[in-house]
Length: 637
Image (cartoon, rainbow, N blue to C red; front, side):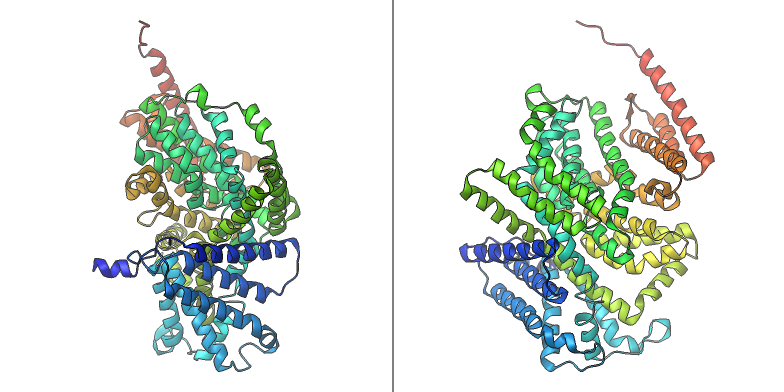
């Protein structure tokens, strides 16, 4: 049984030989340059660009990932065959695009070659998904496809009229509601430029810059190493948008530093995992799910980014306070003076990094053209790279390998968006979306609270086996209609899904951020994930709060926003103190219960409970202050 599970498990990274390395680099750099040029405004037909993007992603997936963990990591002839099939099938669609452009979808007949190429492409996407993500998503897609084929044999409300093979292929491959639909389009025309920007920034030393900034700001505080991890991961993650990439990049510095200064291996990995996960929620870039949200909802990305700012800052307040209280409770020492540079010295040396980042923020928020803003930021990195690497040969290598790294970073996102398109296409074709949403609503008996809880449970379960973009794409068509039917506005409903889906990076048993941190911390990944969930517990509550208190999303009057943000800040403080067992002094059971009740009261969107929570927090704080003042102090020797 164990051997069978390993045979169908995701593959592992392949050790590339020289031919494979250069093939990966050529495909990656070519695709990255093409997509950045499109972001700058160079015109190419949408369909052709998507065919080329999918062909590149599939080829990179088969070249860099083994079929399963048992396969050797060296050269593989079957993988080269799959690469040839990927390029061939996508090349067929590029070649036939003028012909397909003239046909009437769902009316004109498809040729045998069209159907064969489509089936091959669907099979390739599913195989790439199995290798890169896992069997759970493949089984889910196969289930939906089986429903499309055999659903007419069912009885009751879940039966449909039945579809021929040509109808299924036409809808899934030749329409804009399937494989080449919104999910893949967002990945190709939005997400990729930001992933490439993050890879280029990392290649020219951006991760070191963020680490030094964080170190200069909080390194001298108690528990400075943990706080440096939180701040640096937030800064870098807000640009990269990828929890796993954030862990691997900033965690390679912060986790060993935390362990060296007295933090346990498990807690060091958990802090880094929790902090890196928040990067997918923090503007200006956020994660790829937020880009998908713009397409699903029609809400401008700048509006989404501004609305997500306060909850994201509350998330980082929570993780930072967890590190702060834990450090005081355990008596950890600050980092030494020699390890903490001054902020002025860092800015004097590395001020140039702020230019592309500033352009990115300005472009996203002011121009409302995130793809162009990302491309502009990539271009602005070139002068920074010249300053950092004046040698022409090294400069060219830095930019070349940065572009290649960016496309390799798109493998998981691209495959996830492609497979999500198949699921969304099947759901729209069979009208299963409305049936499942109605089922969620009836399962909860029409209760708003239960509907939200059931939706969150479904999202978390999906997130245990899938990356965030795929989770969001599915949940947006499954859970969002049920939430909106309750009277929840579109923006809070979809941001709720984004936040819950993003937490899948630290949710056991498949917690990708925790597994990445475990490889650095040399600790149990499941224990890291459990501790990370405890650290980020408040983050699991925030989506429920802003569903009923949209002022946290900057929706409402200035007074409502001010009150909501103020009570949320105090609630985060109280809950973290209760969870970590420290607030000015070590806390016993009663004090922790009082602070926990105060935090819950401050979070509940009811004026009376907010007032009661604030009064209880004030009284408990006064009690703790007086206890601290009256505690005997050790006399100097």
